[in-house]
Length: 438
Length: 147
Image (cartoon, chains in turn orange, brown):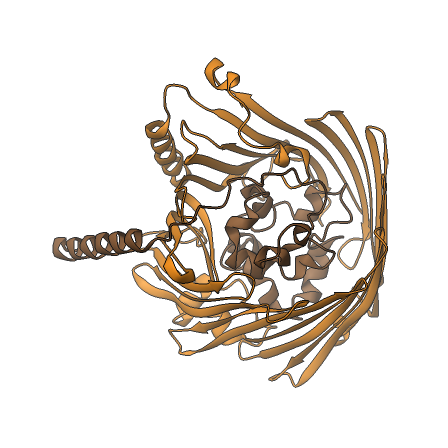
């Protein structure tokens, strides 16, 4: 019902902005037919359709529309799940100004303003101001509490930032969300990007729970280089679970948190430190060494995840391998992990192999080695149509033998909906269709 | 909500909008799309010397893309469709990103292999790292099992 309301609302907005000359409609359809098995042996064959569309020019270059969503239908009868379901991931009308990078988005949108983020049905706007300032604001109804009724739900917030091009950006953001008309989230935070000297960048965010008046999380990243192909990265974060996951009271935190599990201490404070060294040996080979440590205050333990990888990317061929070791505070979090993959393009066809192995220090459900092997064959029928067949085998503590298959059909389209629009030049370069960026 | 309160909000929003428009910078907006075709992974620093030079999509770019996206989303949209973000950062999902792109093993897509099994182990490491995608924005999939 909610989806229907959104579609009706957006159709109405679209119809208001559509001139007689109509539009070009571009986008992509991805259809997946999957075959997989549940632990009780039931074989499932869900059919998925992912469709995204966009119109870059609704009569004027200042107005555009984007939408994407998916639908799933089980081809066999089911009693464990809904026969079909789906979701509109995003659907919004954009009105842009030709100056100040100003825009207004209306519809279902993902908002990511510095230290705060939300997905909502509503509106978001931003604009550059004079003197290097930028302002953004958003408001609407949050869409994340789908198992809750949305009566009295609202979310709003904004961000004010200042930038000196190439030197720094600092921003302060605020978000308030109400669930059933009661305060649910109140977050404040700031974000920073600093480029004080050449080859050095520091960036990060700090988030504050304004309801409980305590920090939720700091996360920062620094990058140094490149120096003759070598780049160094440093990462650090500190997260207070109680503030990060929880909400105003116990009842609401149950609604909000996906992690209210008995095996995770809500009072835990985890500090992560780590980094990586990335070395580009020529244009085709990359070597990476990475390290991350996690210190747990309440558990009084630590974990280390460290290893390295190598990747090769040549004309029509790619390959990579990685080796990592996890040393966690508990025995099930101690394992060795290896991965190797290769992909080869042969004219219109391509073949991909991918193998992942995890060797647990201590057997889990009697299993010490988990394997996942995947093979894919792709074929490009036309520049806009591609088919991929994939088979996957897995063995792990949950499955003695898990065999899956998936058939994927990808079709990109760019439809001039009227003769008038067909005659006009294509709006902008074909970057999105030709590259891998969609 | 009372009529007077609604009126007050409308007045405040209207005044704020007028002030914002009046204070808007006069410089030209970014192009809607990147004016040159970009093939493969972009090396922005080839042409740009300001903050955009930091957006080189090198091998470890994935680890810091969230910071750039939070500050420079308009720059991202020069090349990326919203669907590119939604492949991972969706409100409600059933197919994991690495299943959608089995033919792209070089991409840094989360949860390769049978992660349904592995998440029970790795989830204890730092559940905060799961939350941006599976918490507030995708809590329905977690609650299918974790009611």
